[in-house]
Amino acid sequence: MGKKAGTVRKTGRDAMESLPRSGLPRAKMMERVAFFKDLKGSDGGLPDSKMPGSIRTLFNVMGFQPPANEGGAITSPVGENAARLAAIKTSEGFNLGYCKAKPGNGPLMHNHDTSETFIPMTGKWRCSWENENGEVEYVDALPFDVVSFPPGVARRFENVTEGDPEHESILMFVIGGNGPRAEFTDQSMKLLADAGVWPEG
Image 1: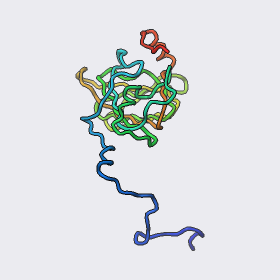
Image 2: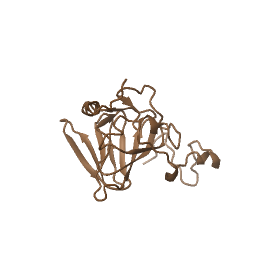
Image 3: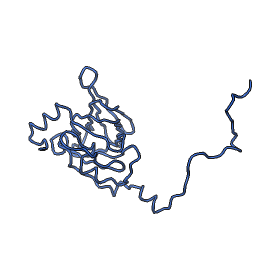
Image 4: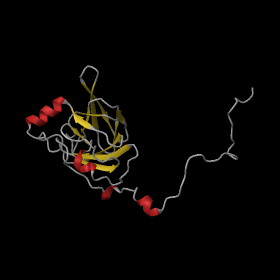
């Protein structure tokens, strides 16, 4: 059988690069390096940041800045404070960060207009979502497990690590997009309003 017309098979000996490539000076590369010990986190900037059961520190390692039309129910997924503290200031289609929290803490149920992926680094984290009937389901994830939510699915995560209630665990998150938006569910907004912490607009 002969080769199909228009196709060329190259061996390793005669293959050539086709992607653009350039060298990068060390100083420029170091702008894209983030050491965990140097990260600046924020424990504020979201309406539920100080709510019992939602206290956490967010580290925006690399990626987006706040969405241009934030306000009211719409905000950056990491909140306005952490969004401005990216250690690696890029806009390359995704955000990467960490959440550090004690057991029993995590954000209220919320939604994103892009995908969101959770990867526990330490501890055990409960990743919950609303199913097609509006019922809450969950999976418990251990270090290096991956839970990825598509856009439009209400979700939350919570540190459910057993043992010392004062010991903080760390969850990595990856959120799609350069300026994704986050919104609390109606039930979460009511909880925030009842607690008197919903932002005045």
